[in-house]
Length: 313
Image (cartoon, rainbow, N blue to C red; front, side):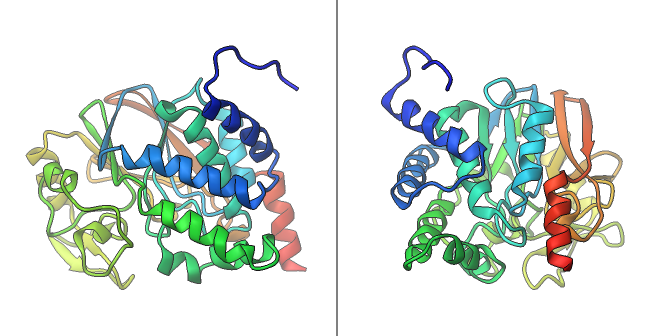
């Protein structure tokens, strides 16, 4: 194996060992999952609701358990600490390997906390992740009723994930969108976030809402949570908070990204061939400096296609 880096703390050393396992897509034992979730929780608990991040940074959208596509993102864009990341949430559910995705991201967070900003998505909660695959996956991968323990460790940790990231005070990253109850960043900064995501709650809107080119103002979303919001809402929010751009995920984009409202709102989608059948491209957003960004677009990994074939047969 690799020579031990000099001067690693005890925590970094354990994280380094688990990271090697996680990168291979192997599962940690229950005590390893427990250590990883609890250590990450301690780090996340100290983070504010909106983290300040500096360029250059790479922004990653929904992953949804597509572990081999996540590896492809790191292989193409660099592992921390060489590259600084903001992840926009929705790590779990739908795909086949949410446990591996979550384990790798948390090990990287613990080992390189300053290079890994992990935001909360609407799937990072008990209610949704018990219905859309994560609970079932934990139960099938950890025998003897350990699955429920593993799921509980991860979902307890979800409560601590921050809500947003601010890149050089100019670009706001959130999972989904706007809320009628929120006009300033300071309102987000003082929210009580250490909680399950409840309905009809501004906290939840940040993780459920979608932009719409067909409306002004807010309109109830047919997702059953959150709102549709128009360009006027984005313009006003950016002006009020002296921002240039909102970057979010939450919506499948055929080409991996979508730029709306005169380049004031960007959707980044990072799960290629979503659910192993949508045939879409994926991308990450590389922000070199405010006002200068580019998309790194990519196709599904070969393992993604293998899983697709297995599911078809």
